[in-house]
Image 1 (cartoon, rainbow, N blue to C red):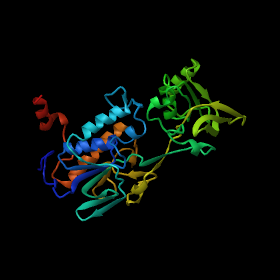
Image 2: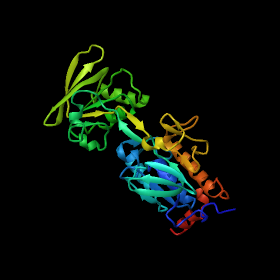
Image 3: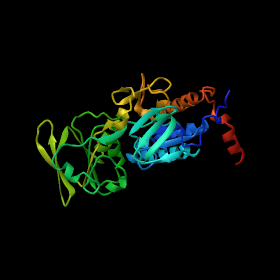
Image 4: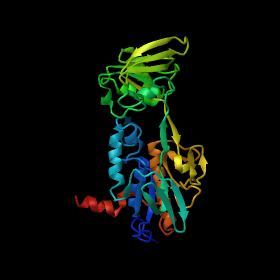
Amino acid sequence: MGGIYNWSACVSDDGIKDITIIGAGPTGLFAAFYAGLRGISCRIVDALPQLGGQLMALYPEKYIFDVGGLPKILAKDLAKNMIEQGTQFGPEVVLEAEVQQLIPEDGHIRLVTPRGEFLTKTVVITAGKGALNPRVLECPGWSDHYSDTGGVHTHVRQPEDFRGKRVLIIGGGDSAVDWVLGLRGIAREITLIHRRDEFRANKSTVLEMRQAAGRGDVTIRTPYEVGEISGQGGCVARVTLINNETKEPEELHVEAVVALLGFKPDLGPIGRWGLELERNTIKVSQLMETNIAGVYAAGDVVHYPGKLELIATGYGEAAVAVNNAVHYLNPKARVNPGHSTNLKLFKQEDEGE
């Protein structure tokens, strides 16, 4: 039987990697770690200019509470830890390279990107929801002010950008409620509007927000929508609110608008690769196999009965995908790798300390 971790039958020096991971969020980075653990050559490809996926691109300053062993951690800190773990075995990293085509060929798979073509024996797709296009408001003044300098935003990257400002937050989901709470003590005033009286966010955070409103820390206005955004010198100065029940307009003076209305997921080129899809996700087996031989998927991009969209489940799916890719490459290799505590690799590292 071939070695469990450091078998060489699949390791090549001709530029063809054993495995290429498409997507460098937490699931993809854990897949890269597992590929190194199994001793296979690995490449990570991502369309973004940095590793970390949505953790870094969308909400680096937001706390995450549902990763095992971490009571809470900032998204950027989780990304930092994942990057350290995922790159420790030296995978090739190719950034700002959207994979436009996936072409199965004899003995390998060709990946076509604007930065060149890459050959690989297997693929694990960990692209999350694909390209996330923020939902925007269709109201006068939106396009005139939709920029970091104009004052209209669709996500919060740096809370300090809002220090001392009167901020209007629009939305009724987790992101909206979380940032109402998260900007306290930073923004001068915080007003939340939602078109309905009920919120979709976690009940405990909604309760915390209502308690903050009761103390006068924040203002909640329902059911309201935005009628118009206006300003001076290209910067937001005021927003016209419309009461959905009375249809009466009200004017609110603000310096920043944050519309947290969710995203429209778009698989982009992935949808044209010949994969079997379920709405906007990739159908996989219990082994994380797609309908294309040698191509696996894990994380939020996949669909199977009982699927949960969590970082925690993405880790497990990444391990399943990589271990089955290893077995696909070398049928003599065990699928179950055993426990990392028994690895000579890590024992030697510990003994040397």
